[in-house]
Amino acid sequence: MALDKSEDTQFVRFWNEVLEPKFTKYRHILQGGLSRHSEAIIPNLPIKKGMAVLDVGCGWGDMSLQVAEMVGDEGRVVGIDCVDAFLEEARKDAASQGITNVEFRRGDAEVALPESEFDYVVARFGTMFFTNPVAALRRMRQALKPGGQMTHIVWRRREDNPAWQAAKDIALKHLPPPGDDADTCGPGPFSMGNQETVGAMMKSAGYEDVSFTRVDEKIMVGTTPEECVAFALAIGPAGEVFREAGEELAEAKRPEIEADMRAFFESHERNETGIWVPTSSWVITARNPG
Image (tube, rainbow, N blue to C red; front, side, top):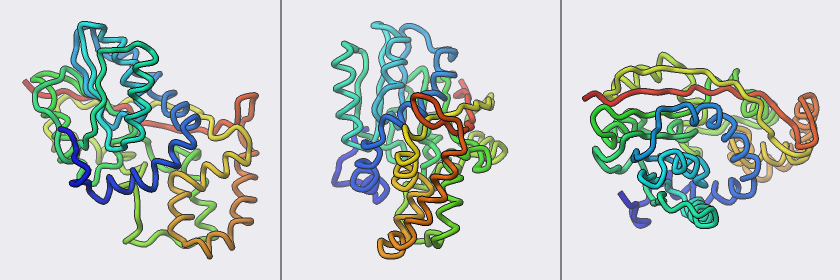
């Protein structure tokens, strides 16, 4: 399952070379926000002591470590991700917490996964970026033992996620949309927002008993309005618009874009920790037949 760097796809290289430094810079926002969705769900999943669990697109590994405690010493967790720097941090955190029943591997669910090895597969905000979603979801199913279950968390529709979409709408008031040949992180954060479409993908990938649960959570998108704007222009839909517009045009429009974004973020809830904006996800659970 290990992914050799010489075989990296353009998608994997883009994550390691372009996106990783930005994600690492804003880890405190990303990990804190994403975990609000998984923390609402993971403790209630039927993950039991002794299980073998695969975490696909594990990132910095915080959810892998949470699951490792759920399965106990008699169980094990494998977290896979294609970003080297994320995996390095995940291993450090596991060591510092003394968690020994978890392993972090370099891998890509679109290329290869083990087969018939796990009781449960989880993924948090990673499957939306699959360039071939049905094939990758099928690999995730095939990683399960017969009767095993999976749960993945994805963003719902654009209009349900102002924390991500509003900044893009502001950027598009001032800049052209990215072209078809733009460098991207994949199909995009809302590619699995439509329940009917994703339900069909899951069935095509061979799953049974597919169910959807909606989770609505406000997440902290910056400690100050300035950080909110910087975060929006670095990562996500607005960041892509800004990056693909080219430095000359983007910088020329930066003052107006930042002013509009600042006004948007200042209109939302603020407390001692930062500024909070609504997000909405689907928690999709299914079973491998057998």
